[in-house]
Image (cartoon, rainbow, N blue to C red; front, side):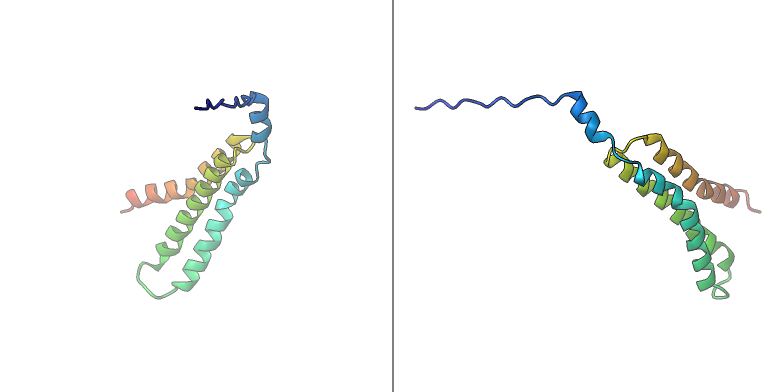
Length: 112
């Protein structure tokens, strides 16, 4: 019977992990694009729904705020998965992109 020797793998140092984590914050910056993308989606939805239904005034806005929040959230999650530098950048972008949704929901709650 032959005894197999196990190969010892070198332990990665924290410096190697740090180098890998230092990526440019591209998706962190994209998370700030949630606001203009949401405004564009609201404009397109309002134009497409003009005069079709009675609630056409809020349909475009609701689609716009959802699009804004979705873009901010997806870009922030992608930023964290890529382990980009400056994670706070993506988090702030997601919070700003979700702010119209929060304001829209608060406005709908207190609407008479």
